[in-house]
Image (cartoon, rainbow, N blue to C red; front, top):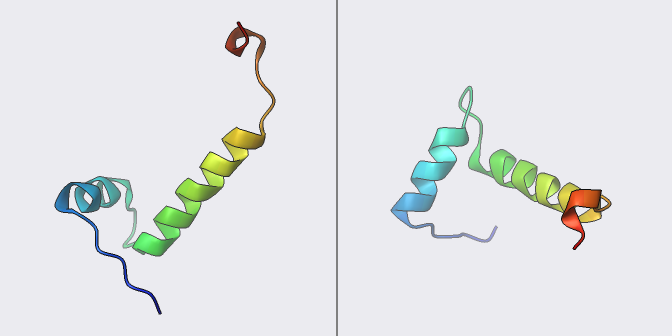
Amino acid sequence: MPQIHLDESTVERLDALRTDDEEYGEIVNELIDINEAEELAPFRGSDVE
């Protein structure tokens, strides 16, 4: 399994998002899902110049 090294500030930000001893992998997957959903969402009228 690959290993990733995170700097201290990233770990602190992930810790702030953790609930009920949630694994870091779960948090990262959730953040990726949110990002992908936002990319697929249609532009709102206020987003277009």
